[in-house]
Image 1 (tube, rainbow, N blue to C red):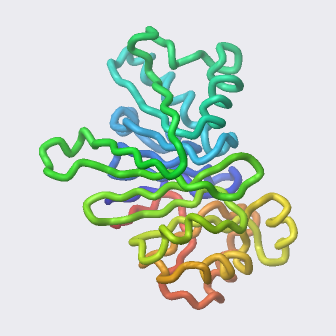
Image 2: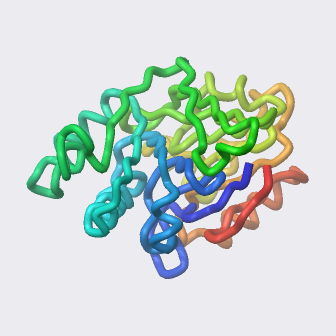
Image 3: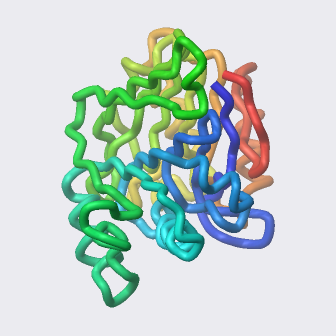
Length: 262
């Protein structure tokens, strides 16, 4: 799997973009950043978007993507996958004809730009990658696992070609997802605040390094890569230093624009 970091910050400042992780050019985990990074041609390759929760910094790229598609009059449909509460929020508060056009019914109800798909926690979804049609292994199995945040939220387990990537999304201390992270090829996990703000982390259901250490202790076999996302840009260097002090060889703080081979 090719993993491209479109955005990985917990707030927006110059050179720090909201979370979005592009897998093999067509599968997107969260959609905080799309059009500000990807060319038109790269945007057309996106076919499936999996959303962890309804907070704006994880969904804000979808409206502009849909608008770009319809402006070009493309026969192109993007499937958006999320739990019921997230799909309801997208319909009610965003694609409602007031804040933004309802692209689940445009240009027609029969062939809309966006198609919303409700997923259930723990139930695998299998999707294909149209870019790999000539390849024998173009299937991805994706499973949503509940995590603990201030709104209903899930993380995702992505399996493809014998590789496993685990993405927590936004979470405070949690449990269920760590069994899937054991021995994974990559774990994308959040650290939003420095250790001096552990109480704020707990209040907002995020992690700092001191809390992350306790969470990693729940994993039987640490993943081969541990990629830290969602730092508040104001504390980026402090968090980076605290991550290094953890002394875990395979851990690193993400930076937007990086590409990994998983």
